[in-house]
Length: 183
Image 1 (cartoon, rainbow, N blue to C red):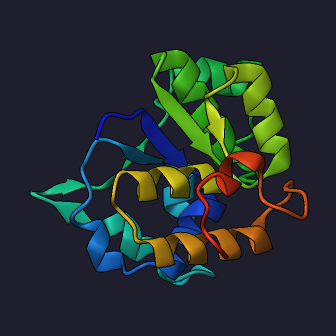
Image 2: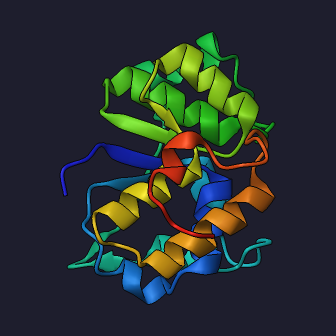
């Protein structure tokens, strides 16, 4: 599987965790999926979607499928996070998206922020440029295309994503209709 790192925000990781067999994720390749530290912290046992912590714990050969990255104080990413984005570590609203954008910019990473949050998507588009931000449906399409999820799982993820989405029009984006999947 040749692809960038897909960094999932809280919404997409929740939809994925709630709607696929988590044990199947253990067969996915490592090194292609990540979450920001704040997304990881928000997904601890007892959160509103208790399965997020389970999907984030999945691993193969001792390596987690969804790796967590942290912004280290004094790093270039921290400078971007706190000086450019003016992030407040006591206010965790939007912190995961800002951590992700800071990390991508500092590391010049071949990575894509996957979010349902319209404001975060627009900010990421302005800061990171095209092809560095995606809707969950784009990731689901990719997962289906490389054989990591089934057609039935794809349909379910599309439907469940619509309920969480903050920016899609009534019909799914044009590129997703090209999959010719009846949902």
